[in-house]
Amino acid sequence: MKVWQIEKSFGLENLHQVDIPTPKLQSGQVLIKMAAASLNYRDLVTVAGAYGKTVKTPLIPCSDGVGYVVEAASDASRFSVGTRVCPIFFPDWITGPATPYVLPNALGGAYDGTLAQYMVVDEKNCVMAPDHLSDIEAASLPCAALTAWSALFEQAALNSSDCVVIQGTGGVALYALLFAKAVGAQVLITSSSDKKLKRAKEMGADYAVNYYDSPSWLSEVKKIWPEGADHIVELGGAQTLEQSIRAVRIGGHISLIGVLTGTNTSSIPLPLILMRNIRIQGVTVGSRSAFERMNDFITEHKLQPIIDRSFNFDEVPSAFKYLESGQHFGKVCIEF
Image (cartoon, rainbow, N blue to C red; front, side, top):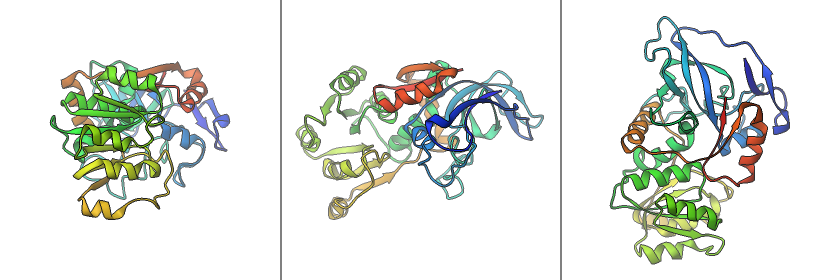
């Protein structure tokens, strides 16, 4: 079978398509013929060799994908042949809170990922994809969608009376927008691109702020919601976290997801966190049971993921370069 693999040295220039044997089934496993994969910012970091010591070569990258069960071990009964499934991001995280046992071990990092024509996966490490989604839409769910879902509904309890600030228009941000609007919450979204903000408004965002034109977007939040936002989806990192702390209401919730502006937190106003009773929650994707709850929600509300562009399996390096360019609005996907 064909796979995309980093064989010895990291770097996109060392990501090559190679032929390796199709994996053999073992007890409790299913063989999945992959149909599509989806790229995340994390995949750029991983291919560059900057993701951490758990990532070793050779490596098949990428965590997100969808495919069809073509064979099942004699003792695997969760899925029949022909079922469309997504492998989960953390294969060992089935339910409950995260533990040291589950978090280091993710697809496309500690384990080989989804840029392969076939994958052998333990049946307990898969979920059925929503029927109304296309293959590329379903492929975008395991990381970005589940991270947004966990932030708003697993580790918080977003409802229709809430107001939410979402930073940026990347994959997690757009899923957070879809989920928040599905329950009727008000949303303010930030971006450096007026074009992307216009599209976010078309998706249902109530307010849009260009943070190049208004670097202190905190003041814009307070104009709309004088007491502050109920919830902030924090995707920027050190340079935006201080504003998030000042923009959230007393007793509000900040979902800390991204570190795109770095990790130096020397300017973080710790007294404000204490005196305003603010909860800052780190979010790292989610469990299989959370994935299943999210899929039920997506199905109930007939949500459609935003796909920017799809590349074919032979164009994987071009897909990575396009993602790195930052031109996209929505997910960048691979069709097999």
